[in-house]
Image (tube, rainbow, N blue to C red):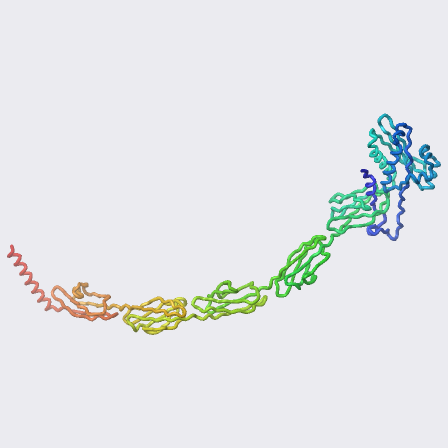
Amino acid sequence: MNYLPFLLLQVMLVLAPGVGFAQLLKGQATPTEAEPAFRKKPRIAVLPFQTSSARVKEIGLSEAITAMAVTELRNNSNFVTLERSQIRAVIDEQDLAEMGLTESASEKLMKVLDVEVVLLGEIAYLGETIHIDARMVDIRTARVAVADFVQTNNIATVRKPLADLVQRMLLEYLRPWMGSLEITSDPAGAEVYIDGDYVGTTTRGEPVRVDNFIEGRYNVKLIAGGYVDWQGEIVVLPKMSQSFNIPLIMKPGSMTVSSEPPEAEVYMDNNLVGKTPLTLREVAEGEHDLRIVKETYQEWSQKVVVRSFRPTDVMVTLEVLPAMLVVRSDPSGASVYFMGRQRGTTPVTLSNLTPGEVVLRLTKMNYEEWVTSFLLAPNERREIDGTLVRQMGLLSVASIPDGAVVFLTDLDSAVRERIGVTPIFNYETNVGAYLVGAERKDYFAGTSKALVLQGRLEEIAIVLEEKPGRILVETVPENAQVFLDDAFAGRTPLVISDLKRGTYSIKLRIPYASTQRELEVLPDTETRISHRFDKSSSYLLSAFWASMMSVLLFLIAGGG
């Protein structure tokens, strides 16, 4: 495929001096300057290629080469190629075949058909090589403007070298009327089209360059994904090379914003743009700050990226502004249940609560359950105080012996109160755990734990233990033996403790005397005995013991 006409088309984008860029885009010159006079496309006629070779004539190669040259010229938009029928209308066919470009033929072509240049040539077959010599003759001056040749050994592929020959000659002929340019775009990556033909893609740091473009006006179009197509008309003047950068405009994107519930205000980049549901068209590509606001709902905000020429959908479910509860109870320490879920113990602050109809429940051991329900509004702060009522039960207390004073101590609060004297029947009190105490004169205090349950009778019996009495024994002289109920208890002075209520026999004895008496011991009482032994009693006792010793010695001696 021959690309030379295509390349020739590409080089015609050089800006004309004195024509502003804005005017070029509109295809208009500046008001102060005249429209440049562009060269018209030259009209060209192709005359039959001559030959003296019988072999060339035999195979009709001359006619074939001529036809190929005509075809190649017709594919070049920079020339107007005359049809053979137009040429035959002014020049005899035989003259064309035999005489070539005569003065007479030149005059007819120029005056009648307005021909500027003629392509003609000769074909020779030397050995196995085909030689083609061609000339482009300026008919106005009768001078050869361009001459070139080509040769080939393969008749079957003669079209390709012939096409190259023709294109070289055309380019050389048109060079004085050609210019070139470089095209860049911002951003890079745009496809460049001139008069509808693709000529390249701009890259970063390397422009699209088009050379050898004949002077004139050309439509230029740049296409890049995500950007608006750029179109303009460019003026190319001969022997000039220029470059320019074309800024591309991003295609806008679109955005659809919806919310649940609807009718929420939409702010984009801090500007109110409407209420949901909302469709925004022609939104600039890039990152945008989006906020959705509705009364009694939490504000929603997020950065949203919009892509060029693409729809962006934003669907938001707004959350109701939370409420707050401050919950207290009397007494404190109650478990708090909000909508069936435990949320701590009083006092407690509950945050981030979902507004609406709510149920609050307070529970505490040994207290009646406290329940309330109410409507909690969005963003509301409410204080709740619950007074708990103690549960009640029954308590009966007996003691052995009766007549004991009963005290009740709450194990939770450590509060102690007197509730009466035994026996006590069906005493109503708060539910809970208690320590029951019984106190009576001359008895140790007795205690027992009681668990009072709601609606039930708790019965407690306490056996009291009587306090012991004691005896204090003193003698003169001291160190007398003391016998309690004939059992040795110790020597004076002596305290005998832990004695139960009753009558006891106390015997006191020293070596020369003894005494004995009965004593009544009372609970929690000290009974005192004091005794003085006299000397007469000591003398008689001494005489007695002396007589006894004499008898004992006699018996011992008689036995000897």
